[in-house]
Length: 407
Image (cartoon, rainbow, N blue to C red; front, top):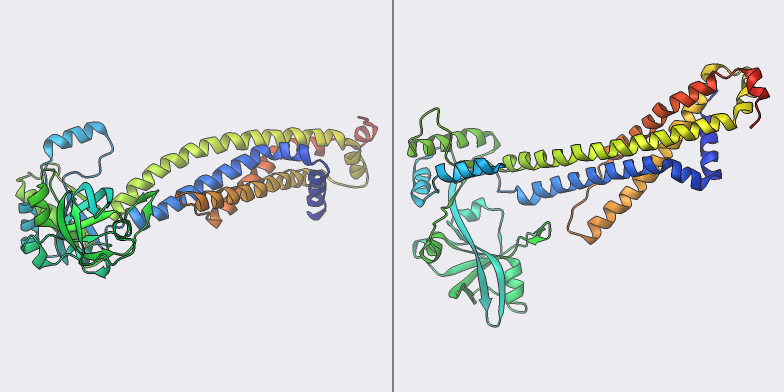
C-alpha cells in the first residue's frame, strides 16, 4: 500500500468534518503558533539588539565602574567596592596602553534643549573626547563632530541628533545656529545621521559637547566611561587584557582580588541578552509541551473513534489480504497527516501574527525558516506518537469479528 491512499483519506476526513477537525487540531495549532511566534520574537529581538543596542562600535569595549551585574546583592557589594572611573584613569590608559588603536572617553546626563520657542525634553547630553567621532557609531550627516580644539578651549559647541534637529529646526539648517542646553548657549556644529529607535525609544535625541565643557558645567561625580578601540577583532582579547592589567595596577589589586571595575563589549551584552531570551524560550517550551500533549491526546481519541467507525472497513481490507503493517501504516499516516495539517494552520496564523506585530508596533519579528520546519516535524511526530495506540488497536482486529461488528 502506498502512502497516497491514507494521506488522501486523512485529507478527505478533515474536509468532510471541518468543525470537528478544527477542534481536533486546536491543540496542535496553538502549540505550533506559540512556538513560531516566540522564536520569531526572540530571533527578531536578537538581531535588533545586535544591530542597535549592542553596537558599541567596531572592535570597541568600554571600561566602566561596574561590570554587568544581574543580582541585587552583587550590585550592593560592587557599589561599596568599585571606585568611579576618573579623568586620571583615562589619561593613564591613553598614555600607557600600547595595543589599542584609539582611547576615548565620554560622560553623560539627561537635560533639556531649547531653540526659540521650541524645546525637547529628556535629551541625552553627552560629553565626548574628539576621537570619539572615529570610535562611535554616530556620524555627522551635516557639519562635523566635536574637534580637539573644541575640547581644549572648552568651546560651547554641540553636535545634535536628528530628532533634536527636526524638533527645534523644522524648516531651517541647524548648523551654525544656537541652542540652549539646560539654559546655556551652544553653537550647533553638526547634525548626526538618524539611528532610529530601540523598542520604541528614540536614539536620536542627544546633544554631544566637548568633554571638558561638560565637566565644567555638570562635573563627573558618577565617573566617566573609557572607550577603547582595538586594531581588529583578533586584537580585542589582548587589548582588554592590557587595559585590565593597567587598571588593576592603578588600583593596587592583588592577584587574588576581583576587579573593582567593569569591562564591557558587544559580545558581553549579547551573551547577557541571549541568557535572558534562553530563560524565556525554556518557559515557552513548557507551555508548548502542554499544548502538544493536549493536541496529541485529542488526536488519539479521534483516531480511536475512527477505528470504531471503520471496523467493518478494516475487516474487509484484512479479508482481501491487507496485512497488519498495512493497517498500522494507514492509521499512523492518517494521524501524522492530521497533525501536520494542524501544524500548517499554526504556521499560517503565526506568520500573520508576526507580520501584524512587526508592521504595527516597535517590536521586531523575524520568522526563521528553520523554526517552520522544526514546528512541522514536531507536529507530525506528535501525530504519529499519539496515533500508535489506535493504529495497533486497528491492526490487531480479527477479520471475522470486524466484519460482524455493527455500530
